[in-house]
Amino acid sequence: MAKLGDLHEGSLLYNIKLRYKKDLIYTYIGSILSAVNPYKSLPGLYDDAKINEYDGKDIGELPPHIYAIANQAYRSMWKNSANQAVLISGESGAGKTESTKFILRYLSYQSNDVNKKKGKEGRNYEEQILQSSPILEAFGNAKTVYNNNSSRFGKFIQLNFAATGAIEGCKIVDYLLEKNRVVRQNGGERNFHIFYALLAGGLGSKFGLSADPSQYRITSMSGTWDVDGIDDKADWQAVEQAFRTMNFSDEQMSDIITVVAAILHLCNMKFTTAGGAQVATQAVLEQVCQLLGIEEAGLAEVLTQQKRVLRGEEIYTPLDVDQAADSRDSLAMNLYARTFRWIISKINVSLRGDESFQFVGVLDIFGFENFEFNSFEQFNINYANEKLQQYFNRHIFSLEQLEYNQEGIDWSDIDWVDNSECLDLIERKLGVLSLLDEESRFPRGTDESLLIKLHSSHEEAAHYVRPRVANTKFGIRHFAGEVMYDVTGLLEKNRDTFREVRFTAP
Ligand SMILES: Nc1ncnc2c1ncn2[C@@H]1O[C@H](COP(=O)(O)OP(=O)(O)OP(=O)(O)O)[C@@H](O)[C@H]1O
Image 1 (tube, helix red, strand yellow):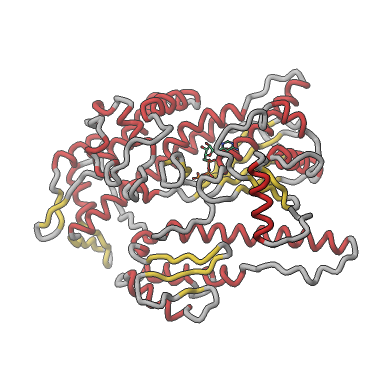
Image 2: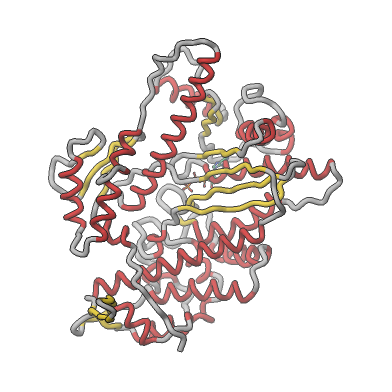
């Protein structure tokens, strides 16, 4: 791409399109690989022969390929004695998770090859990571309007290598699980797969659950159940199998399922007003408490009252029905997020290996998002992408600068868009993040008061957008485009109110 005579956006896109029509989905832009999702299997593109072809070849020696990137990471780790990272970025459905798998495949193949040559029986880490993926996908993926199996969390997979060149262990680090999805989904989308899989798996009756997802608020609010290419019942079997392969005990599996079942019940809980919120669905309360092993009175109390400690004294304030519903949802989200974290930590115990030398990491993280309604989640995702873009700019341009200097070329006229001003708007003292935190801590802070402060502090900033007509939005001009964020519910999400809850067993 860099060698094109006429370098501008139109010519770059046209080149990608021409190549795509010939099933050439990969293109280099300097040392960066651009991949376009083919949405079909391309025979021979990823087989063992291809791995051997790319083994030890420098980037550019052969046609562009994801294996060339994996090979470069592997070789550079040895050559430079330095950890390596492959950053995969793109919008939802672009093919990030598939690309991550191809990189794992390449590195695992090399590792197995080393072991074979040494006559050593090594563990097959690729297989193990792949074996854990039904669990990660069931708990971390969901149907969205863009992708029927969209990862709703980011992950960094770290493959640790021994000095022999073989993989000696790995680790998964998760980021930004979209826990809001547990209690809210937009039309045409679903909750995390696990809820439907559990119901379809036929185990529900053990937990007082019906097999019908329309019976539960959090699996019915969007009115979307069946998904092309997803068989919930088969997925449940795959999850059970994966738990066994990853050494989860029967008791641990049962605990996890119990929490998921309790969340389904909990979110069906309703409240009425009687001088403050009260639980209106006693049977649901009983069911949740029985599953979680906690006292009914205690749970009802923390969901309907707020406890404050004032000069050493506990003061209880009744919550209204909406606040109690928020408490319920917050408890459900946090139960889910903590279970997810725990599952990953358990998988990591299984994947852990011996002392290692260095690692190659693969970052598979949400790309930039711009929807009709953008909220807290999009703000965080786009902020993370803005940071990655800054790193990328600095890295690439400082490398280029180094190369130019070495060759004695004057580089002063390289023109690139620096996004530090946009990041400064978000990060500086009294920037968007700090105003958001400040308003969240302020007891009388509201979404509206936040918006007023944002507008008055930043309307002059080049990267800030104040809408011409007054509404509930503010905008940020990101490197990838302008995004309008809606402040409705922003404070609640940022506070993530998880009121201090001390449960006692009955
Ligand atoms: N290289 C490829 N060859 C064939 N099919 C592909 C390839 N890459 C992606 N796909 C197809 O596209 C679908 C979506 O890809 P993937 O799940 O990797 O996207 P993603 O970028 O990780 O999306 P999200 O951000 O929503 O998780 C895959 O399920 C697969 O069917």
